[in-house]
Each structure stands twice: as C-alpha cells, then as structure tokens.
View 1 (cartoon, rainbow, N blue to C red):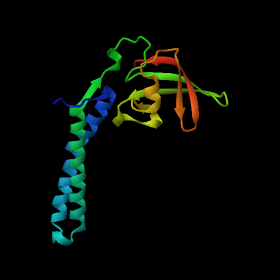
View 2 (cartoon, rainbow, N blue to C red):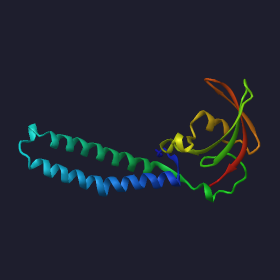
View 3 (cartoon, helix red, strand yellow):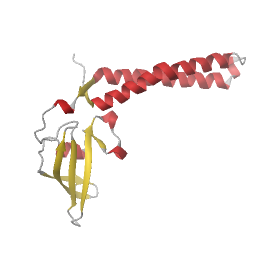
View 4 (cartoon, helix red, strand yellow):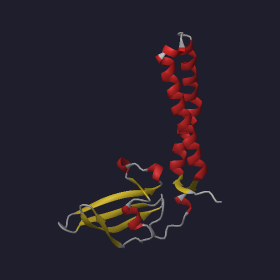
Length: 164
C-alpha cells in the first residue's frame, strides 16, 4: 500500500517546520511549566488552572502530530528548479486579466498556486484544488480560459506565468 502524497511548496514546508519547532521547543516547555505551577496550587479536582493547562497541552500535542503527519506525507516541490516553459503548474505564480463577460470590466489578478494547507487569500495564494486553479493548470501563457462561477462566467487571460 502506497502513501498518499500531497503537494506542498518549499515555502509552505518551511512555515510548517517553523511552527513545529516553536510548538516543540517553546510552547511544549511553557505548558509543562504551567502544569507544574498549577499543581502547587492544591487540589487538582477543583484547580481550573491545572485543567486549562492540561487541555492546552492536549491541543499542542495534537497540533504537533498533525504537522508531523503533513510533513511526512508532503511532496515538496521546488518550482524554481523547473524550467519555465510558460505552462501553469503547481507552485507557479500566474498573472491573469479577468474579464466579466456580462459587463466587459477587466481586472488584473495575480495568484500563486499552492497546496491546501498553504492557502492564504490575503496573500493571493490559492489551492491547486480551487476551481480557478483547476481551470488554469495545464494551460499556457497567452491562453484564455472561461471559469463558471456562482456569480456568472468569467474569462481569464493568462498574461504571465512565473516559477518563483
């Protein structure tokens, strides 16, 4: 039985590794200290600080396990090592010209196609599983694609494809 691999950018892997490092070396130590201090306060049955600290410890340990599992199943892709042939692929940063087919309005948008755990709309990072990414992956620079959205059909012109 093979393990399901999930694509992740190098940047995404570094962020997960940094969070994991912080949880293991800072938060874990802090919560152990908080538990030790709350034990000194007396009866553990009625000790709210102790129960809160134990609950937080459970959350931290669960998050550590989750991050370790994600990293072990990750297929880390270094987009900068791929020769740019103008094709939209995982990890690419794509500049699109969006045209509303009803109004004719145009807007320039730029997105980086990333793994599900790296999505950050404010930073214009979209999942490779999103409808827009699925519509443009495999297409080439200067191609036009039409994406059906709940608010109507939108046409995108792939203006630029960068492997950065």
